Length: 210
Image (cartoon, rainbow, N blue to C red; front, top):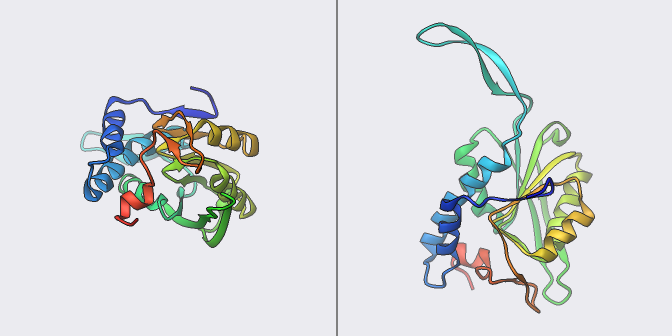
């Protein structure tokens, strides 16, 4: 564990992740597991949200009770696979504002190409959580964070299901101020830029496409 990287080693997270890795796991079950894991990860990534107190009445007496402070969170899905994490997180944080960054990876260069960008206003006043199941080469993630910073975000977290050492290093080099929360740091990337042992293509497995 470090300030830059948090691995969520909770037994339920690790068990569900193992089920997701298995080739035999169906699209429907994969999607459900991703939604469930995303809530555990959301719990961890929001641990340091700013708090304030407000006066409330319980059935017993009045009290100063803790409540979230400041503007609503911004959850930013890095399309398309980020949407799988987004669904579960919104169940936990339904008031969050939502944005989308559309990037696809050029299979020849492995470089990200932007095709869509729509985010909430006042990013400079919100905690911004960018979500993408896989931190592989880190190129798409770095590009997405670049765009969010250009849009004014200053308090950013990155949430992923799996990370490769190469992607973690790339993110730390480009954005040392952006903490990463993940369920696992896997062994390495293969020659095609996929995480090994990994779980295959998260988007394909989530949406049933090939």
